[in-house]
Image (tube, rainbow, N blue to C red; front, side):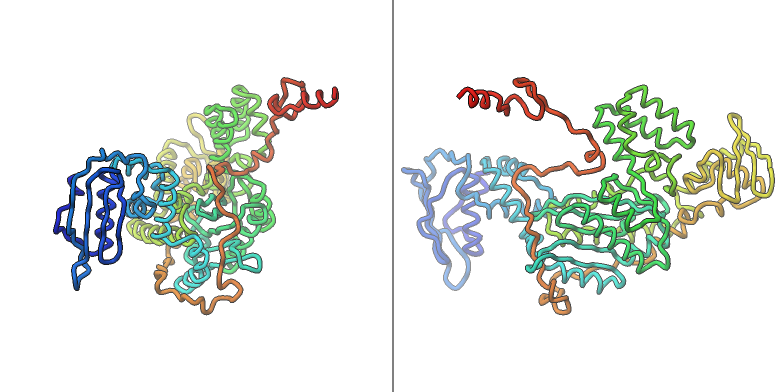
Length: 583
């Protein structure tokens, strides 16, 4: 390391800044502190800070050129070079220059990793707070400040609407000083794709942002014909509460209403928190609501510290007959009667396939977590960077999926086609008895099933639950020479998949091309200021409020000193009260 930072008389540097950076690097790498005697635009004179160390350096600017050259270099260090715990030259600006390229490659470059990398390369220890400040400053230098992000929001929304006609992008502010409150964005291509090609299922959820002013990203997503994630709309709010969910679902309803001749019959999947449930019930009164099974199974596993319960709950959810449902619930009862009682707070009509009244096409879990992974890296960045991350990902996914589907020659999308082929293979082993034009009895080695091709029903319930003919239905259809593919739901076809990604999401120009003045934007929201809420010190709260937490019985604490409830021994006031009474 030392050899890389040795200087010689006559050595030249492009300018004074390059020389100062080089001497700073040398001081840090060789573990000595500098005392700068003179430093301006034409000369630089410094010595080692340790008393008695003879090391000196002098550099000057060459005439008629910005070049700096070393004029004299005296002595060698006799100080032992022991500046290892902290270093005056290792300023926040120096750390920023050290981490800038790394930050560009990895937004989640943590302060503790910065400390380790600097210690590994230079052998010095810097304070954690200094590394944290450097990261904040580095992110602001690369991506702009959080304050600038809010200020540019109206212009950015105008750009979305200009480049992607039919899209919705609105900023909502609060107070006389126009503090940011909410943002709603839905690209025209996303709304069109959802209404014309996706499954009529909407996943709803949120994820906390980690920038200076925090906030929560709310989103509405669906499934394409191949089961892939399809984001429809998203929003950012300053505070997550029942009112903000009501607002988001209201904006989402308006977006669909503008583009649809009639509101489709939808099924909403969420984690079941009260704000979402109430908002969906009010804004989409004719829709069905389901609780995310992934969330429920994780909750029961954590609540009772038993992963087997989570596995059994999945078996209960997938039961296709009421008898199978009861049998599998009995298995949970055998493992833990408390767990069986705990499940009762969630009506089976909201999570079990056999009791659910809406249409889920086999999707028991929300895909919100998959969408949240899109922006995990951008959560610490200004709000505009979060939106840009989603926009860029949407553009890439739309293009990639359009290209991918161009080579499909089947009637159904691959995952649905696979299910259909399996059903056809099994159907060849069944015997079919025809009752009338639409009703059939299908016999297999183990069972007998009744199929009605007019109502698209089978007594095994798979056809109704998944929207694709089951093996019994396929056997019945083949027996009367019907096209089995004509009896699959339209939303599973390749044609629907292509419709989903038919519209393009267009690029948005860089900020340099935006109108800086805000011309054409509503005067009331011309300048959007950041929300008043800022990130508090310390580790952020990770736990999200959900129905489970609201319904859970509170734990009662007990004092071992006075035998009363409501406090611990350490906070007991019994002794104090006793002494007061004696007094």
